[in-house]
Image (cartoon, rainbow, N blue to C red; front, side, top):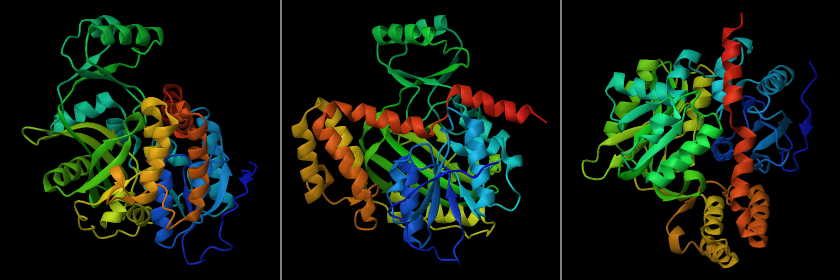
Length: 429
């Protein structure tokens, strides 16, 4: 097997501390990867990345030593896995941290990884219970965890009869809010039925889920063979492109932490596990709606006093770390890059982008009393490069905001075809 080609990294430090473990992140395009790089770097670590994009967001960091070329895991899971295994062997990697859906891919191929490499992963059967939205609904029911009223849809006719507006329709597998549709009336329902039928989307089953009125919150956790090591919760203050976050606020909630601990213990979970839930306005009940069996945007947690990437690294290396205490509540953070994309997509106007730039630069308007988590120029000046590129593109053509988000997701997400390939790996001897 040939060694993976390296992209030259103009911002790499001259040397890495030899006492620190050699860490490989599974990709470098996602927001989660970019934030994990920052948290690990501020703790004194340096990391290498896998990426199908030579200009991925994570490349531009003083904390990154190398960016290894690999096919996109969704387009070519076999080629991507081969590239990862090659880097592990030739570079003597100590720990692999899956920072997006590659965790699912790695779980399917766990037996192909060298036994000595640190890789914190639950078994594939546990992944199947949270990766699929239908399986997650069954799991939450079994454990008595609150969730919205949910129904499995197997045909266009079943969806065409649905009337309980508003509701969400969810594909069995999806990422970055791709494969989630909010249906408010007959017209939207009928249009979605037609679209899904044309795409033959009913074969894998779809979920129809009641829309709960309330606030979106997200909880992130690290487990060590079913033992909760670290947990953080934050509230979405301002929604951004694709259902992501522009502003977040840290939350401390013992009830939610206990629910997460119950789920992780029941699954014997090992590694990172995150959930989305809606806190219903009247009762304050947390209705769980989605799971992400991976590390998700950890910098709000880090700035609140919870080190999720550090905990994941310790668990990966078999160090059995003690449980971290909850962080501070009320820490408000921003994702400045997502804020710019949000400003551009609202009305496709250059003046809106310029106004948002001014607010970011002065810490005013919607960014007042917030800390930057995605492009922290104070800690990692190289992030100025992608920030400048995206800003220039949006000022030139504000309508490009959607294209920027879509191209990034394609670099790291799995597809239904690649998921079927993972199942084929599991069935092979």
